[in-house]
Image 1: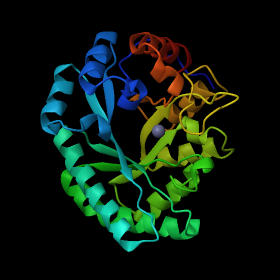
Image 2: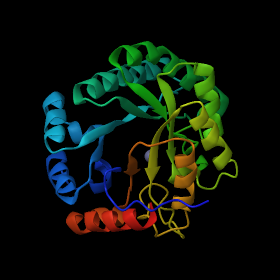
Image 3: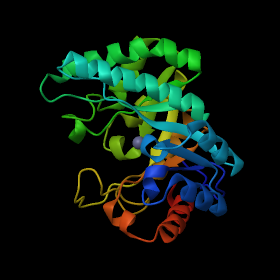
Length: 277
Ligand code: ZN
């Protein structure tokens, strides 16, 4: 299996959280100057802003708004909390529409006070109920399976196989899967499940970063591509073979990198993208 390295930046997307110290206005200016062509917007970056105008600004800089991050967190033992989460997802659909993107990434959620099976049922019901609104707004929902270390509070969907199965039972063209190498690289069935996902036209997003060894923080110690042990280019070749031709999204939560000069960090992202993605 050989994958051609990507020399240009036409498919490079960066998540606003990757350069968290920058406001979205600063981020878009720097991304655009560096030749980055895609941006995935985290909802906190939109706080106190006119969302429609922000979307227009991003496009003026020549960027495609790849997706809005994130919806989800459906499960809870408490019905009122579940209802509030559902309303927040409806709001996310409105925000995505205003922003001018056609995709929301779902971190599905989990509640440690109940069995994972129950959380999965609530995720299914939540997405199911959301689908008509997503469809009428023209927004696709991308289920992102999370590494099992997050199965207590962040997601009861921990493998791509579970995500593929859930998408299959939801049976709608408005829901698919987001593949994030950080969460899925360890899975022996990854190649097969990426193929299955692509075959059914359900592969909606591809996120990259690296797994540092050792990892010192379960949330905020992700590495730049090439700094860890994830075979990123190999996984990309599976995604390519599955027919995915969308943006390759750099999503790095790192307390270390957030402390550094973000312009220097951006240069490193571009270099490591060309070398390892
Ligand atoms: Zn991700």
